[in-house]
Image 1 (cartoon, rainbow, N blue to C red):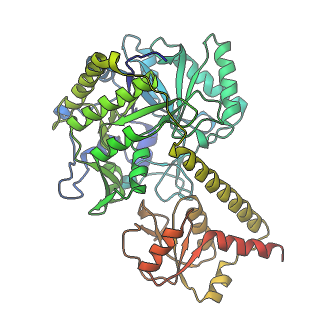
Image 2: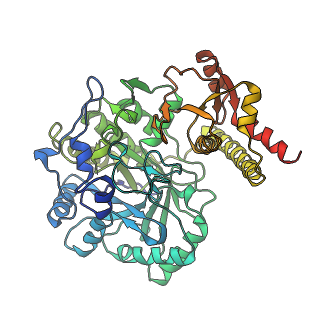
Image 3: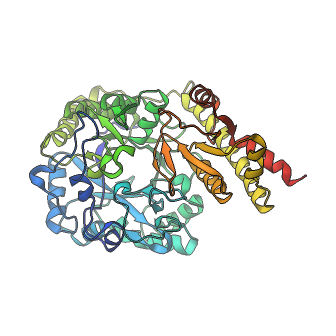
Amino acid sequence: MNKTIPKVIAIYLPQFHETDDNNRWWGKGFTDWESVKNSEKCFEGHEAPWTPLEENYYDLSKYETMKFQAEMAKKYGIGGFSFYHYYFEKGKMELELPAENLLKWQDIDMPFCFNWASASWIKSWSKIGGDIWNEKYEKGEVDASNGILVRQDYGDKEDWQKHFEYLLPFFKDERYIRIDNKPMFIFYRPNEVKQLNPMVELWRKLATKAGLEGLYLIGVNTNISDMELDAAMLYEPRTSINNLNDQGKAFINNGVRCFEYSDIWDSIINCKPYVGCKTFYTGIAGYDDTPRRGKSGECIVHNTPEIFKDGLIRLLKKSVQAGNELVFINAWNEWGEGMYLEPDEKHKFSYLESVSDAIKLISEQIETIELTKEDVSNNKEITILKKDIKKYKSFTELLIKWLEIERYRKFDFTGYFEKQGVKSVAIYGMAMLGKQLYQQLKDEEIQLQYGIDRYFGQYGVNFKIIRPEEDFPSVDAIIVTTFDNEQIIKMINKKSKAKVFVIDELIEHFWRNVYE
């Protein structure tokens, strides 16, 4: 490995311009600036709303805006931008204009790459998985039956080829970011890309045929050992938020789930690389999604440029030791989630100056930084991987049985609960299995009172989700849908007199009935 100063790549949201779809979904002229301007203080000491320096609520469709951003980024040492790439079913795209304009505006010196955020766009009450954009602004036209704004379907070889052909002019652009002289492309949700490996195999062949030296492909927040990718990336703040949740370091402030900025940075630095694969790291300027989600959001508190600078110095050093070419920062301009390096009225250019200072310091120290080889002999990730394998195997087996029961129409929660003396029900865990159970119980017209989940809010019509820390309203039964639920069941029994059922046992009961 060679010692090099990693380039700092800032995550870039291409949102701040008017689009026909945003007009339909959220109202005429809507951009994420509306979320920012209308944000409210949710608790004492909450730094909201925040205002761009000189109230520069810019329009990303304008040449002057992107040129100014490029010049500012270069001045403070930002090595390029990672544009979110929104490409959906049958080639439908969203927020593509800034990147397409950049391709035309060749005089703008803005190195860039793409980060494919491939999940469906949904409203908060949708039954399918996906990215929820603006929970506080849900109005306008949408398919009311499923809450889907834009559906994702990865298609077949013909669709993959069309997608590559769209990307090719960007890959060939001299400003496109490369590793080993190969255009770099990030899969934000690689585990959700159906037939990822055959898609990647086709793309690599097409790249070579087009005269490129190949592609450098990165998968986010997953071990890529069984994927035809080149490296992994630990994406923040989600990785560290999950870690701090597990460590009990989250706290509720007037309904908002909060985390200390210094704790987040300590978690970032302490995160180990994925076993057996190159791993890039991400730092953050901040995080606060209450402008989009109100009190159902999350917030990192006590952010300062000083903590950011110290964290970035440590992260750059860690990346030098690992031989990484890049360090990512989330984000350049994610104003609707409080993640931005761009200057604001409070801190002015302090966060950008911190980037410049950190790079300068590491450049002065680089000769004294020793390259390290990660010792994985006692790496806790091996334990985590084993746990994940067990978890997903359990989920797979459960879903196979669920489908079998559906096929033979053997579900009868109504009859089952009548025998148990149960009339009213709550669901603990509103992820994939919780959503599936919600629909099943709703179809049988069972009295569903509420859900319990870390991420609370509204789901469906008249169905409220509360947090585990809150008091549980009285119900006859609570059904637990989460994996590894022993501690959860103990907690429920302490807080509620309700009968507790586990989804695995319920499915097993109905599955046995299939063959009786």
